[in-house]
Image (cartoon, rainbow, N blue to C red; front, side, top):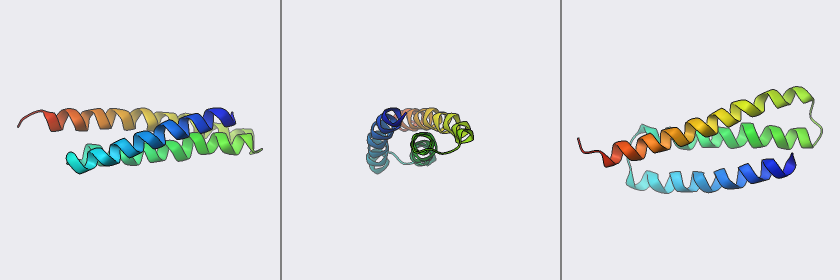
Length: 89
């Protein structure tokens, strides 16, 4: 469980860095939303797995899928932001 939390935390922290750098070149709410969603995903997904690995009640596991959904929505928002920036007009 701890390894999964660390792995997703690391990859999405790098993704958050990419989204932040893209924000310098691409304007719009989609990129900003992507950053917030990836941050929420790290906190909710990885954070809940860290908590479970450290002995939190099993009910904390209900938060993990919400974080996973935030990851997915964050990457979708990032893709839309990049596509909209490349589309003229």
